[in-house]
Length: 300
Image 1 (tube, rainbow, N blue to C red):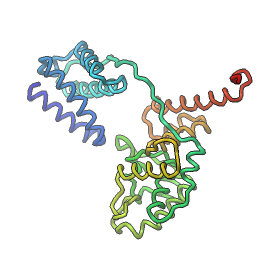
Image 2: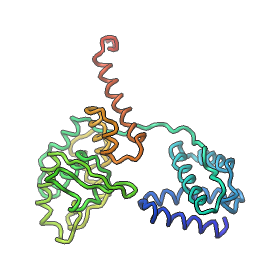
Image 3: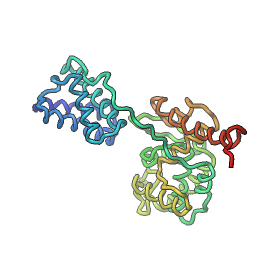
Image 4: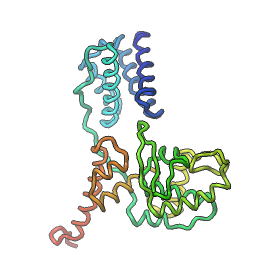
């Protein structure tokens, strides 16, 4: 690619960071996808973005699939390309978007793993021993109570918590702010943690969850603590923080059947993202049917 074409990539990155205010992780994903396209262009003698047409993008998608990329990843890659070419259109560097109307191979829908209600109750039933276990119980209660993402939880500050009103202010993907409810059990656990936290954190430290040294608790530390507590509780599967969010959504949908409400609580921009939990809810109903309907029972 020409130096000018490379400059467009840099300008696009600045646009995503300043105007779109996307996260560092999202910026890195865009960089990988566009880097893959740039490499493909170099191998095929394409020097400028304006040279690309629909057939080129189809060939690029096919080459990605041949290299082992799955349908969902190719969908994400094509979405990144459409956004980039849309930016070039806006800036007058292109006359058309060559990635429009190009579909990736159909992705296999993978249902998220969850804990059932009994497993979650067992995990959260233990009595904490010491300030670190009090902290761990509080963060797990908040995960499950409010359906937070890992980055949302580790980014919480004391100003975000309003335990009197039972609410927490969350900064989600794309720097979108939402208010999430905090249940009574999570409020009690957080009150105990905030009392213990005072002896661990410096007065100027604003992070809700801190480590032994008083510094803000990072995502990796939370992942390790959650996995360790799950093993100690004897859970039969690996537990990661996002499983609390999946369980929150699934259990709420099973009880309320309010898909729009669950979408708002999760902070999903598109309801199609939330609809994966309807498949889990149907699995639950199907199991109930198999166990209870007289014409569905298997003969011994």
